[in-house]
Structures are given as C-alpha cells and as structure tokens.
Image (cartoon, rainbow, N blue to C red; front, top):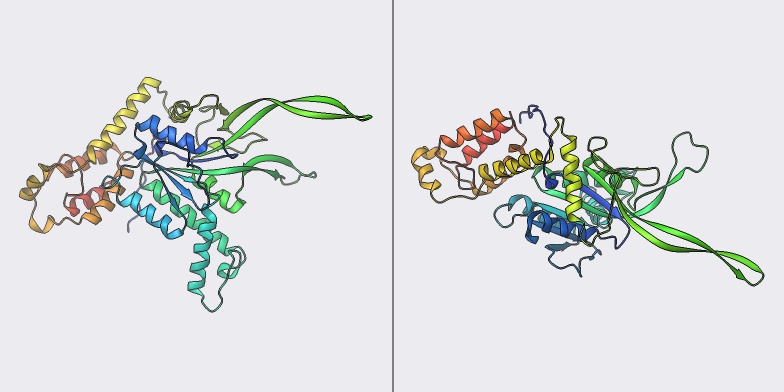
Length: 385
C-alpha cells in the first residue's frame, strides 16, 4: 500500500475531535460531565455513549444517559467494530466515554495472557508479567494493544473520553538527593498511564481544594490541634503544576490553568473552554464569531459530502455507469465511508474539488453506502494523495 502523502494540517474546531483523559477522585462528577456535554452539544443523549467497564457501574443514578456495559475483551472489540462499521446505519454516536479505565487494563491483561498461552501452550502463564517470556513483554503488549484500540476509534472520527481515578504519587527527578515531591496523578502504573499521555490530546485532573482552619483544644493536661475543613472548591486542571499532573496540546495560554466547578451543570463552560483553546491555538488571529462560522462551515461540509442515500440518486447512477463499475459492496462501502469521514475535513481544497468532480461523473451530489464501491475507492485514493 502506498504511503499517505503529507498535507498541511489545520486545527479542528469541534470538541468531538479531541481525545480526553479525565481523572479525578470518586464522585467528582466525571460521568455526569460527559452526559451533560453530550446533551449540551447535541441535545440528544443518543449522540454519545458511556461504556461501563468491569466492576464499575457508576451510572445507576444518571438519567438521560446512553450507556452500555462490557466485561470481556471480545465485547470491547465487538463494540469498537460496531461503533465504526455501523456509524450512520444503526447509530449516530459522536463521542464515547470509557468509565473507568482502571477496569480497562485488567480486562486487557486477561486477553494478553490468553493470546500468550495460545502461542505457547506448552508453557502456560497466569500473570501478565510472565506472558511472552517475561521481562515486561506482556505489559508492553497490553500497552500497544490499548494504544491501537483507542487510535482506531479516533481515526474513525469518534471522540473518545477515558475516565480514571486519582492518587498521589511520589515524583523524584534525576539528581534529587531527597525523596522528591507529591503529585496528583492517576491510579494506573506508568506503563498504562503513558497510553493516554502519548495518544490523547487532553489530560485533565480534578482536585478538591479545601480551606482548613486549625483549632487548639485541651485534652486533659495537654493541648491538641484539630483541623476543620471550612470550605472547598472543585477544580478541573487543564495545565500541570508541581502539585497536579495535567496538560493539553493547545498553544500556551489558550486555556486556563483550571476551571472551577461551581455550578450543577458545567458542560457549557467546559465545551467553551476547550473549543476556545482550539480557536486560540490557530496560527492566524480568528475572532469568536469567525471561529463559530468556521465551525458551522466544517459541520455543513462534512454533512453534505457524506450523507444518507437518496432514492432519487440510485437510478441516475445506474444509467451513467458501466455494468462492471456498478458493483455495490455495502460492507466495503461502510469501511470506505468511515475512512472518508475522518480524512475529508482535513484534506486540501484541491482534493475536495477532485472528490466533488468524481461524484459529478456519476450524477451524485453526496456519498452514501449505495454508491458503486469503485467510486468510493477512487475518492479514498484522492484523499490519500
């Protein structure tokens, strides 16, 4: 297969094009934020899906949430294939959240052990560290499989959230003579944590900043100091500090250090903060109104060029195409349309013109699964140039 020739990139304008890794302490409101973001962005719960993993079922009391639950790697593979292959056919899901990824890796480790035992049945193993001969080979295999899994969804144009819990970790830099310092990070080990640091656009960390007052009381003939929490502020960090591990791939200064969660529904502020980061990260100066116009044009362009089939299109195509070029492989067409969706909005204006010219040769104005497979393959070839 020929390599994909380079094109000049442009920053996306839609939050759904971001991969978001969000970790906080329990009951911070991570799943609620995802639910509210879908409703705020699309006004339709079915446009998003929360995937509960393993023993995590933190959505029981969340109303108006489109969700499912998986416990095996086979189920995770099936749901990924369904999300990609059935987009626009059985669902219109734009964003998915995996809740929580603390449960994702135990499921993945079981699969790695299973595959290792299939490859070497004479020496079966029961732990991830012993898989594939040990020396961390099993962990590295799981790490790569996780990256491939999330990247496949991202390349298909589906927004991905990974939700996790937090814990304090000791950070000791090279050359330090003391014990280092404490940083708020996730509960995952460094190998699995790097999956999200390498692949995801945003690493967000939630923290509750409590105001504490000291009170001295007498206990017998001794004095004792008691600490009272008098106030608390919930903060979601977009930028890292020496205390909180976080970060985003935005231009410096385009997003605040943190967003204060002081309202029941923070979705509108959350979406605005991230999409404002996109706007300010663009190389040219774009006002908020201009950016909003660009967003609308991007949505309109992709919607028009990849649409549901229209009955009126089909007889026109049949009269203009030779029989040997009119073969319609619906399964193959769905794969090609998924690839087209992910590449069309970032391709060059010249390529977009060639795509429209290709459609005009058969009398079609938009792409759908009922077009001849050869036509869609030609369009993919154009986008890969």
